[in-house]
Amino acid sequence: MESQRYKRRNNILYRLRKKGVRCVTKERTIFIPYGKNPYDILQVRQLLSEFNFVVQFHIE
Image (cartoon, rainbow, N blue to C red; front, side, top):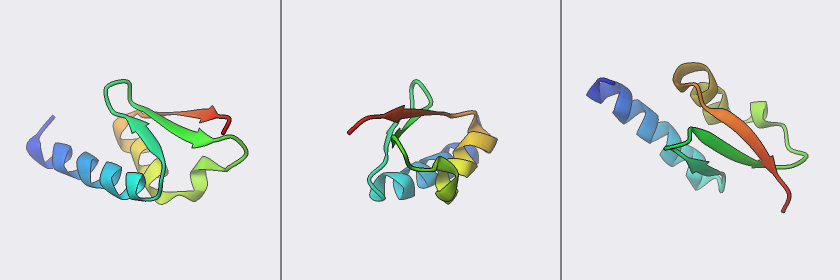
């Protein structure tokens, strides 16, 4: 990946983590509480479409 794409991905992850969502970048996984719609969050949509992340629901 180019350095610009790394920077963009890191900025998106930073904004998403500020919202309280847990992410594992090595596994490219976003953990969303069960019952919430992941597509309501812009950063989740960006990571899914541009960087091939996946969503995993978890029970709180």
